[in-house]
Length: 189
Image (cartoon, rainbow, N blue to C red; front, top):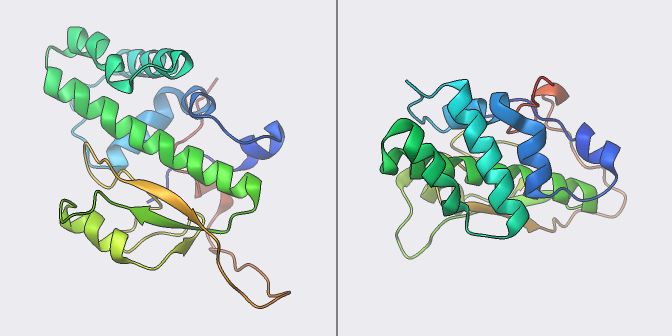
């Protein structure tokens, strides 16, 4: 499940991505698309509320503090602490996935594996993805997602995997439109 951020930004920057880069580049449209892709209930979640989420995540990531500290400003706006935490956790899963995918591309890593919670704690969807073989970057896992989040409050992640292929064998393309390979859509600045 892909929503639009391409690797072009990472190539232009010529350095590995940071989560702050991803949040700033995605902005409100990117977070809205990522949350919708994880089936988060977005009724009543307006662009100003998502703007606060973007600002709060940027602030806590820049300070190195826990991302859960991004929830209180949302709690004040929407009046529901559980929903605020769900939005923060799901947005962070999307941001971390995009950061890993961009860093892997910048470093020449060709594949990723879905990392679930393990110990039988994964939901069915994430467990299926975690049991799957590694996939080339930006290729969907069995659930159709290119990485977490697969559902609201997903705590899964991606880990880089070095694929073995015969010397000189080309890396195969996903065959999808490059404009739709990202998880987060770029902001419309």
